[in-house]
Amino acid sequence: MTAFIIAIVITIIAAWLIIKNYQPQTVLLLAGLSLLTITAIFYPDNSILYEKAKSTGSVWIDIFAFAKGSLSTQVAGIGLIIMAAGGFASYMDHIKASNAMVNVCIRPLQIIKAPYLILALGYICAQMLHVAISSAAGLAMLLLVTFFPVLVRLGVSKAAAASMIGLCAFMDLGPAVGTANLAAKHAGMETAIYFAHYQMPVAVAVMLVVSILVFFTAKYYDKKDGHVVVVQDVTKVENAEEERVPTFYALLPIFPVALVLIFSPLIIDTIKIDVVTAMILGTMTAFLCELLVKRDFRACCKGVQVFFKGMGSMFTSIVSLLVCADIYAQGMQKIGAIDYLLVSVQNAGFGFVSMTILMTLLVGVTAVLTGSGVAAFFSFSGMAPSIASKFGQEAVHMILPMQLMAGMGRSISPVAGIIIAVSKAGECSPFMIVRRTLIPAIGGIITMLLVNFMLF
Image 1 (cartoon, rainbow, N blue to C red):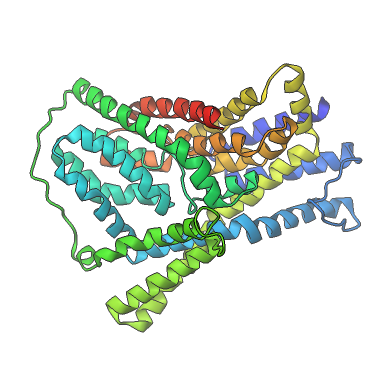
Image 2 (image 1 turned 90 degrees about the horizontal axis):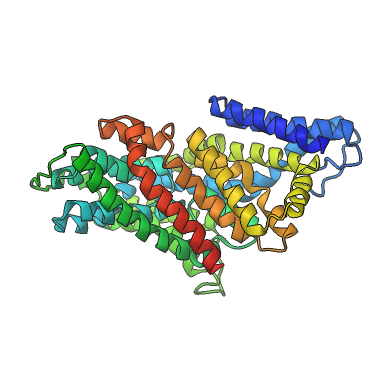
């Protein structure tokens, strides 16, 4: 009981500091090291070694060796996947392949003359683009440049168009997304299996519900705000640099995703291509395309450096957070707080479903308060496998709603970077954007939970 109270106090302090915009990596690292230190002092019978690591001979050095163990394990595993995916995304932005894919995807929508129908279909299109364009903020900026003017010319308000784009990464889907890769790791399965067998059945239902709610919500608030639909001539505006990008570049961002899905137990199981290998193959394929188009070997070689810079950027922002969150989660387990919590909820009559909803809401609330779905999910995902095993359930049944909730919470957070960015384009406050995304988000969350429990 005492250990649990100590862990809760440290967790509350850490959460308060993160909400107050203190650096989450440092906060989680300090929280994890504090839990390990308290464990070493007051609960010496509990091991503070990282997994199967050997003691350094000093319990105090073991605390910091724990951090080293987490760093080496996470960077060599899921961290490398996240860095490779981030590097590939940066390179796709550099060669304008992401722009080409967005333009190709939104072009058919321009044929439809019903503005709010296009808005609803645009959400589905944008959500599917997120499978290949892993950065939520990056995808939003591309859509603001390409799709936003089209929507406004078709007659919807700027606020409605901006709000739909704010929902473009409502669910983090696919092998290129960091949270999905981490979820697959915790679930003990390949990313392709997690995406195709678990994410997509839930995502299809959620996308349908959210798109319908986007249609009616946008129409309602536009009417309430006195907006008058005036259809203008829709012409695609591109700068000269974008016009020089070949159309086939639109296939490059989805090439690694296709490789991961094709060469997996889903289709061809005799050859296996992991995410990192697929990203390297995708980068080299794009390099050859650049070489054929530009015929400047020196410039193309220099361009590939963007891939490695992108990897470094992902380590700084995401992988470092993953390591610190792992130390915190492991500290919670070492001190015995997780075991105490599980025994308490089981004695109180809480079942696996109730615990799953509780953990999912915890991730969602954290994402709303911090504006970061990644930070929210990484902070609590490490606890899911042990909780699920105690109930005799598969970890994926708990980890899936938690992972999807991370993006959902971000979409209704007025402090999220993506919401702030689209609010500027919509010429309104982030709270006005959240007012429009809230109803579709709630509908999507309820649908996600219902479908998850019905199917699995």
